[in-house]
Image 1: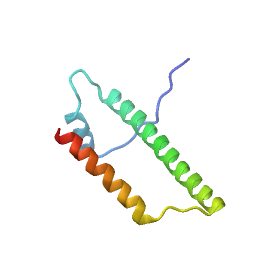
Image 2 (image 1 turned 45 degrees about the vertical axis):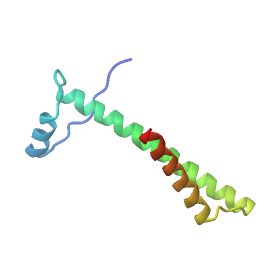
Image 3 (image 1 turned 45 degrees about the horizontal axis):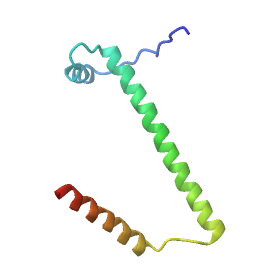
Image 4 (image 1 turned 90 degrees about the vertical axis):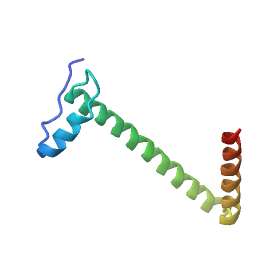
Length: 90
């Protein structure tokens, strides 16, 4: 498969300098930009999946008339946090 290019992006000199300052040894600016694009694509896909799951959950709750009480949800979350902290301290 042939490779493709992204259109050139104009940025102010300060942004370019900032990007160049965080390059790792042997990393090129174009490699950094490519990896940044890949990371953002992955992030946006995960975010879209998260929203889709939330909307599906809401639709299911509306369909079945079953909702979780906020105090119960918070209690369960606080218990999970407490257990995680206890395990981290061990």
